[in-house]
Image (cartoon, rainbow, N blue to C red; front, top):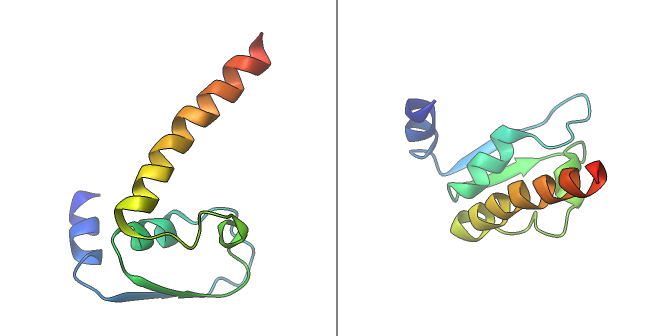
Length: 79
C-alpha cells in the first residue's frame, strides 16, 4: 500500500472516469490528498460534498476528522 502511494505521488494528475457510480472513491481522494490534479466525471458521489474542492494536507485533516465524526454518530445511535 505504501509503495502504491509512493508511486502515485510521482504523478501530477489522475484521470478516473468510472462507468458506474462511486460513492466515495478512495483512489480519487488519496490522489487529491497527495496534491494531484484529478479529472473525473459526475459519478463520484464525494464530488458533491462541500469538502471535495480541498486538496493536500487540508483534505487529509478533514478526512481524519471524518473518522471521529462517524464514530460519534455510531456511539450516539447505540445510546
